[in-house]
Amino acid sequence: MTRVPRTRLLGTASAAVLAAGAVLAGAASTATATPAAAGADTTYLVLAPQGQGTTKAKDRVTAAGGTVVARYDAIGVLVARSTNSAFTTAVAGSGVESVASTAGLGSLLDEGETTSLSAQDVADAAGNPTAEPLWANQWDMRQIDVDDAHAVTTGSPDVTVGVLDSGISSTHPDLATQIAKDKSASCIGGVVDTSEAAWNPTTSDHGTHVAGTIAAAINNVGIAGVAPGVKVASVKVVSDAGYIYPEAAVCGFMWAADHGMQVTNNSYYIDPWEFNCKNDPRQRPVWQAVQRAIRYSQNKGVLTVASAGNSNVDLQHKFVDDASPNDGSSPVETRTINGACVDLPAEAPGVVTVSATGPTQQKSYYSSYGQGVVEVAAPGGDTRFRTQGAKSTPTDGILSTTFNTVTRTNGWGYKQGTSMAGPHVAGVAALAVSAHPEMQPGQLASFLQRTASPLACPSGTYNPTPALGTAYVATCSGGAKNGFYGAGEVNAFRVVS
Ligand SMILES: [Ca+2]
View 1 (tube, helix red, strand yellow):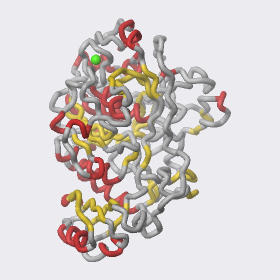
View 2: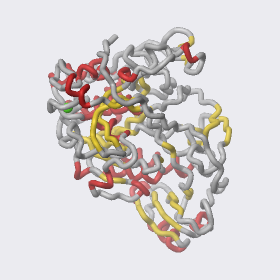
View 3: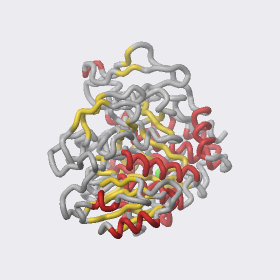
View 4: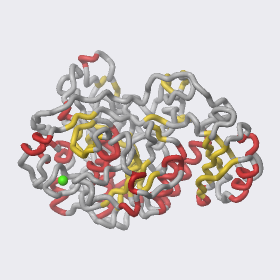
C-alpha cells in the first residue's frame, strides 16, 4: 500500500458527464441506416471491398450526390457527406461493400470528475525522487515504479505516443516541450486540420490530463509523467459537444499510423452503442471501418492501448445494454448483448485493454473487466476505496495536467477513470519501445503482460463500496491472468531494466 499525502484542495468536484445519459427522442437512424433527415448534411462511412481500393466507391459517392471528405485507399474506407436523403440506397452497388450514416453514431466522452489544485497547493508541495514539486501526490507513479525506471531512462525522443482525445493544451508548462506539433492534428469530422488551434482543447481537458500522465516534463514544475523523454501528439477526435464519431476515430488511427507513432492511447469508446454489434446493419460498417483502421496502424508499427470503460461490467459475459444510443439521436433501446457485440476499440483484435486500480492495487469500483478482454491493469484512481463508497476522496484519483476551458488557464488536478489507467500503460509501452525499438506491436503487447506485477482475483464476490449497497459488486474469474487485472499491473522499471 502506498501512502497518499493530504493536500488542501480548492474547488469541488465537477459533475461527472456520464456516457450512459438520459436520451431524448430525435431524428433516428433506421434499420437500413437512412440519413437523419431529408436534406440534412449527413456524414457517411462508405466501405469498398477490402483490398480493392476506393476509386469505384468514390465515383458512386459523386454520382449519388455526395462529396468525399476523406479517402483511405489502404483500408478501402471513404468518409462522405451528402444532403441527398436517398444517399444510402443511391451509393450502393459495385465497388461499395457497405455504407452507414454516422449521424447518431458518436459516443459521449466519459469525463469523470476533476478536482483542481490551488496555486498554494502547488507551491507548498515538496519532497520527491525526481524533484518535481507534486511528485509526493503521484502515488500512481510510485505504484508502477516510474522513479526506478527513470534512473535507467525517461524514454527516447524518437518515440511518439498519439493521444486520440479532446486535444492537448500546447501552452501548459508541463507539456509545451513535450508535444510533437508536426504530428498533431484535429480529426473532427473525419478531416485533418493541422493548425495548432484545431488540436488544442476547446470544451474538455480530458486529453490534457491523459497527456500529462504519459509524458509531463521533468522540469521542476508540477508533475512527472511516465515517459517524459518521449513525445506526445495531440490527435483530436472528441467534438466540442463531447462526442467521438467513427469517422474521427478512423482518421485518428490512420493519422497516427502514417506519422510514425509507436503507440496510441484511446480512452473512449466509439459509437452510441456501448457495444457495437457486428450483425446489426447499422453498426457493422462502423465495426469494419474501425477494425480496418486499427489493423492498418498495427501493420505500421503502432500499438493500440484502450480503456476498458467505467461501467463496472463484465466484458466477457456481456449483459443487457439499456443505455444506448446515448447521444440523443434516438430512443434508448434495451438490447441483449451477445458475443457478436464488442466494445470499440477495446475489444478489437490486438488492442491492449486496460482496467483501473486504486492506491491499494485493487480493481477500482467503476472499472469494467473481463477475462480474455483485459490484458493489463494500471492506476486509474479510486476515490471511494477508503470510504467504502460513503464519500469521495479526491487525492486517491490521478493527479495530472489540466486546462480550464472557461478561463483558458493551465493547472493540475485529479481525475479518475479507466481513461486515466490507459495512459499509464501507453507511457510504459513508450518506455518499453524506447528501450527495445525493435519490438513490433504484438511483441510489445506480450512484453507488457510478461513484465506486469500479477494481481490475484479477490475471493468470492468483490464489493469495494458496501456503503453503496451492491452498486459496484463484481466477480473476478481466472487465475494468473484474470478478468479484473489481466496479467497484472504494468511495471515501468521492468520494461527498461
Ligand atoms: Ca513537471
